[in-house]
Image (cartoon, rainbow, N blue to C red; front, side):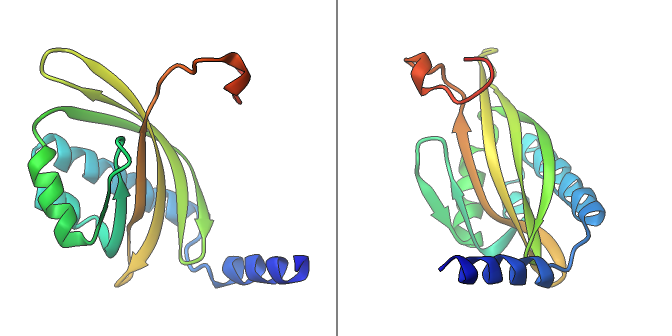
Length: 152
């Protein structure tokens, strides 16, 4: 079993087409375009940053799949708050990659919500796009024993 897992991981690494440097550059550009479109209330444009079969998992656990559905969802939610994000280190995976990000949602009344996200990227027609985006809200843990970080 271990041999098959190693072979699978090796084949994923070998088939990757993006260099780490170009992937990072493209991911940062995609992130900046996403934030700009979100803050300028361009729901349909946001959906264009996703692969046709992409899935977004929102903070409440609701999953939306497909570019057309994402366009409807984003068109409904943009304008209720603005976002800012910081993209972490981008890693290659297959013909795309993945990264972690942190963010802030700022509401018109000044309320701020800190977030974190997992981005999985894929290539579609030679263009780097989001394939999966999962967003979570940063909340304090009820017990220190549940904490995995260094600030526990």
